[in-house]
Image (cartoon, rainbow, N blue to C red; front, side, top):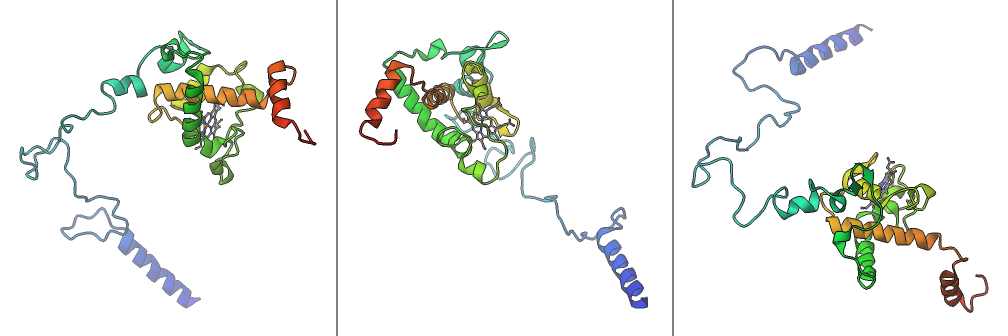
Length: 223
Ligand code: HEC
């Protein structure tokens, strides 16, 4: 027991010696177990610097480049008003594709294909290829990924504009992707998700769908 107290006292002195007594003034370099990035090679804002020919520490944007928040990028990635850029009309979520996209029947297949490509890059890792929420990230532990085929996310209950806002700003555990998916591409992704939802819930009572189903499954025994 005596040795225990001795060792205990020694360790206590060591701990205080290394971590404690930090309020004292000393000219010596302190022992830093965790340096916390206190010292780093950097140029502080607004200070002169001899490294650059003009002697300025703060640099101007390189000629011919634009920061993300200026010019065209502004309407693409943040800040702009209107249904195309917000998904809302006045204070309400809108539905349907914005007129600015000038979608025609001929343009639609390419638009949806673009949406599929973008969806597979930006959303599939979590929401899965079919949109059921079973993507690879979900399998590796991202919790509560939404199954986009549940009734709550179908267009009758969930306006396109609301989906636009979720893509742009995120919701709950999901972060926003507005900063790296352009406006048009966000709408294209929504169009693609709508087409996936339709495909999942395609009613056989619709003669067109029934014909397509018959054609696709002709010759199969277990349809
Ligand atoms: C890193 C994983 C991840 C990625 C990538 C991701 N999501 Fe999500 N998403 C989630 C999670 C998790 C939720 C559930 C959020 C919650 O309710 O907390 C969710 C919820 C949603 C919802 C339902 C939101 C609501 O109102 O409840 C929609 C719609 C959605 N995501 C669409 C998308 C689209 C479109 C993309 C691609 C642009 C995308 N997500 C990319 C993880 C992700």
